[in-house]
Length: 286
Image (cartoon, rainbow, N blue to C red):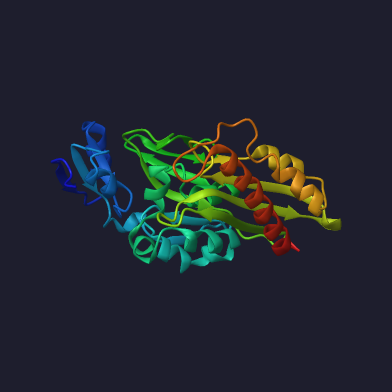
């Protein structure tokens, strides 16, 4: 397929890109293009103007903040993320190799994936479990929001049209923490039918003192399963406790159904992979 006609501007600065977004309702950002271009070829997306931010150095790279957290620039590719201090977070080591293929991981950007908000994208589950923060920039200033609540529906986020996702802030590594990602993938596309990221904090006596559970592929947008987190906290992470918590991963949410999996199967796989992710995270925390 051939995309519909569009205008093209290569932005030379973040400020220029923001100015175009503020003045042109038909403009859309492009960075790696691994999500947007296929949609344009199918004419499921028909932006009037593409604003290319892919060569802006200020939005690329991983840096350590004064408090030990990591700032991941929105234009950082998956491959670059795996070659950065972020690999100290085990869930990042798990989730990135599960994304698409080598070509996509070399070109696709972290910010592009998050802003695109595919309901079955792997990375949002990890960001939700890690309680990551998103740095959002507009012509009027910069704001920071939690990943939890940012994903609002299929391909819908809390990002306004005139805003750019500038960076993702990951937590500093902790000695009492363990994390993991487990998923069942649709073989042709590589997207998860159900994917669960787990982060657990284990204190003295082996008690779970905190947890983060991010889920993708199950509903119409990635979400944080607070019910599972609450059920884990205060337990010692026994097999029975983990199974009981994992059983809550879907809750009362509407489960998606498509040609790859029905609702019952997808819900069952969510429970299975929630248990696997939690067990792996607990093993890494001890």
